[in-house]
Length: 498
Ligand SMILES: [Zn+2]
Image (cartoon, rainbow, N blue to C red; front, side):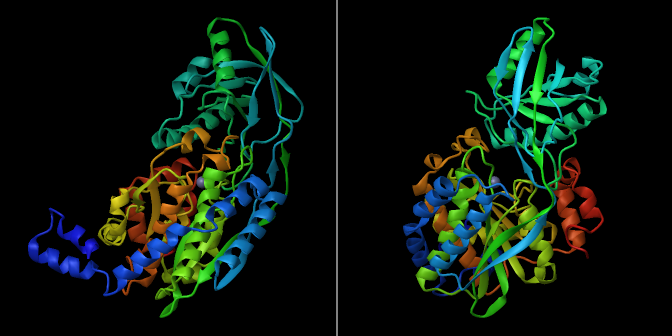
C-alpha cells in the first residue's frame, strides 16, 4: 500500500478526495507482493554484464548499414531468445542514405603548420578535393557574430563552444547548431569547423542533419585544445589558413531493422506496453553508455519477468530500435508500421541516459499520469527514484509515440559520467556502472509489468487536438520547428491524424 500512501501524503489533496484517489490508484491485492518478487529477481540480472561485454567489446560501435549493426541484430535475436521471449521478430525499415567517414585530415598551414585532431561530423557531405581556405572566427555563431565576420564566401567558419557539463548544455549544443548552419550556408562558406565541447582532446561523433539525410554543408569537429589555439592565433591578428580533407562516403538507401521481443499478456494480449532502447550507436567508441547498457537492460528486464513466473494482463513488447542516432528513425518506423494499432499501445517506456542513477521519469507533458506512475514507482523510493517531470523534448525514441497520443515515460537520470563520454571514443564498457544498471533493470521490469498488469490503462490515448495542446504547453512545438520536424506534424505525416 506504499504507493497509495504517497498519494495520501500529497498536501493538495482534501481528505475525502484523497481516500478516493488512493483507492483508485492502489494496486490490486497481491500486486505489491508480485512486484516485490519481480524486483528481487530482476536485480540478479544474470546475463546483463556478459551480454553488454559481448555487444560492446566483441561487436563494437553500431552504425546502421554496417556489418557491426548486422552483428548486433544477431546478438539481440540470440539474447532475447535465451532470455525466454515468447516471440522475437525482426521488423525492417528503410534508412534514407548510408554514410561512413573516410580518412579525415585537417591541417593548419599558416601562419604555422600543425595537424589538427579532428573527425567528420556525422552525415556531413564529403569535400571533393582537399579544401584550402582561410579560417574565419564567428564566435558563438549568432546573427551578430556572422554580421561582424564580413564576407565568408569560401571560408572555413570556426565556431566556439563551452565545455559540456549538464543536460541543458547538451540540449543547447544541438539546438544552437541549426541557425549557425543556416547562416554559414547563406554566406556561402565552404565548411564549418566546430570546437569540441569536451576537454583533453576528446573527439565525438556529432550529428546536425535531420531525418537521416546528408547535411547541407561540410562540417568537422576540432579537438578543443587545437581549436582554442586557432582562435588565439586569429585573435592575435595572424590570418589562419587550413586544409581539410573529408572523403566521406555516401551510400544508397538501405534496410535496417528494429528487433522486437514479446511477452504475451494473459487477458488482453492485443494491448501492449513498449519497453525500448536503441541498439545502434556511434562508432568512435563502442556505444556502451549510449546505449548498449540500456539495450542489455531491455533484454534483462524480459528475462526477469519470465524468470519471476508472472504473466501480465497485457503484453509487453521489448524493442531494440535502430537509427536513433540519425533522427529516431527506428522508433518512427515502428510507430508507422503499427499505426493501425496505436490504440492498443498503453505506454512507451524508454531508457537512454547511460547509467547515472535514475530519479524518476520524464512524462512527456502528461500530468494526468503522474500520480499513477508515482504510485507504481513507490517501491523504488528507497533508491531515490520518486519524482517525475512533466517536460517533453526531442531527443530519444519516445517522440513518435508521444505524437500519436500514447503516454510516454523516459527515465530521468543524473549525468554521472555520461556527458564527457557522450558519442566519444571513450564510450566503452569500462564506463558502465553495472550495480546501478542492475537497479534500473529492476525499475524497467517493474514499471513495464505494473503498467501492463494494471486493470486500468495508465492514461488515455490523446486526440490530435490534445497532443497539439500538449506540444504548445510544453514548448515541444518550438523544438520541432527548430529541428525542421514541424511540417511532418502539420501535414499529418507524423503523429496522430485525428
Ligand atoms: Zn542514445
